[in-house]
Image 1 (cartoon, helix red, strand yellow):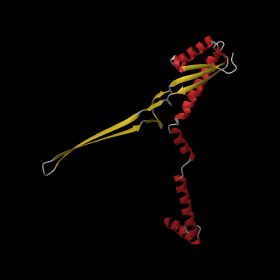
Image 2: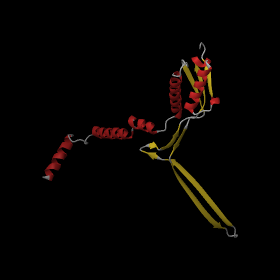
Image 3: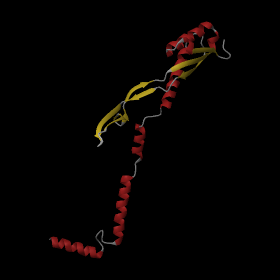
Image 4: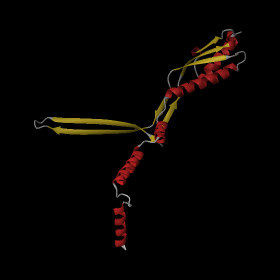
Length: 193
């Protein structure tokens, strides 16, 4: 039975019916294998997008978001003070905030002593320290996130010409931002009362 099967394959090979028997089929096989290798090695867009998502983002946008959110909240609260009218707020920030990430620290210390033939002792101490950011689920592990520090605020209000309203605006802004009174400036808006 095996002999009959081998005979049939030889006959088909002689007639060119079996795959791999001609010159064209060899080139076709090489082409298919090459395309397969290229497909395996070619980076897919979804994996590069995933890597970009895992990288720490620029903190400038988070600072701008914090500043915009705090400014809008202050304007809303201060404009609700009786007699204040329309209020605009500008904040001054000391820094961009602080993000602290967990780290793995490896310290190595190596002591070597050598004695030269002329009785001179040589002692060498090598210290190395490696620090790597700890990663959890593909993202850096954030330990602490401090918001930017507000160092001053300017409030422009329609009703700031009235001393009572101006004093209330100063106290409210200083209290909300945890600032001393001298770091809060309230001025009257052009065309105010």
